[in-house]
Length: 261
Image (cartoon, rainbow, N blue to C red; front, top):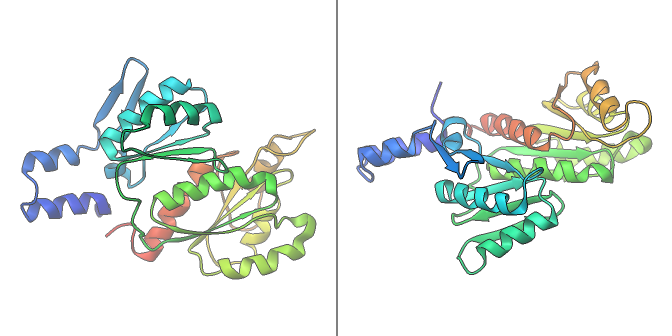
């Protein structure tokens, strides 16, 4: 298996004698863990080991604990992302980093926070297309979009093209047909990913969303429908925008030649 781009860069810098052997070892230590108090253990080596960012799940954490974790992660990686962040989380983190030189961004549509002291991710050539069946699916789709962009992909979107008005789908697909992979988010009966997978020659990732009500509501019917798809379709868990975005980015970057060098 070839090393990922980050690891190759470290080795090349060492060969050019731009960094010492100790500095190289410290950078490529893929199992390094940073401990935050007695509550959290940050996987500081994920970017080197897996080629994808360490992302903090804000849901279930107090605003103060989230701020502690994000600042610790920022110190190790120069960039930190938190998903499922509430306005209260955002306010606490913003207050902690004011007047520090740390760049703060709250993407309300994606429910995500970004802290950074480093440049934004460099493009790696992958193109990811994201479709949603309805407007209520957009927050999960935006989470997937954020992660794919953080992994260096160009992301194109088409929202609200579900099967209740299927004529909306075909013009929306036109500007997505040259994407390397498609993510299709849908709730309720979750039919859209199967239809898209039957129309395109690209990998399709089904992203079930917890919309719907009554029998098998909350995304359960959508998940079951995608798992039973007669078209070739990969499916992630309900509301798993992070997983869909990271998987799509890996596929797209490898297809573009930018995932493994």
